[in-house]
Image 1 (spheres, rainbow, N blue to C red):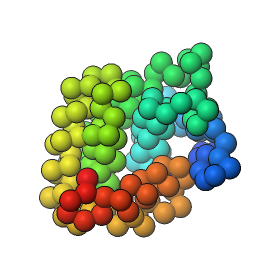
Image 2: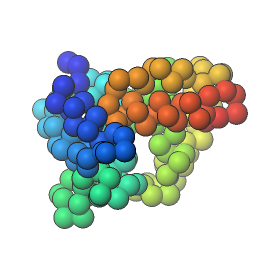
Image 3: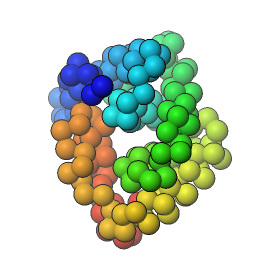
Length: 163
């Protein structure tokens, strides 16, 4: 099942200079899919990103508020998505890059900080073994806020010295 059009539309409204704080709404749709057993790769990459972003960024950017019940579950959903895909991640350069970069950038803000710190270290090594020159940023094109964020990061970290 591909990611819902409505989710991408909400993510796209969060991108650019005139962004709207719509990621919490996109999260609710993705979380509903997760709770119903939808574990397709693309939707799970997006929910993991939004959970992570909701943890590290303020509510005026994401749409999550301190009173949102979802705010308290973001760490757990990030961990759960990672654990669900753990055996597949090792051979998936995009997943290694995404989870590794998120972990390496903000491990100290996440629950289970030592776990995430080690993920950041381990996944960079595995990712660079698969992609010595880094992922082509175009891999992330037209994939909502998730794609926009990691396309920009891939442009910055392109080459052997980047993440």
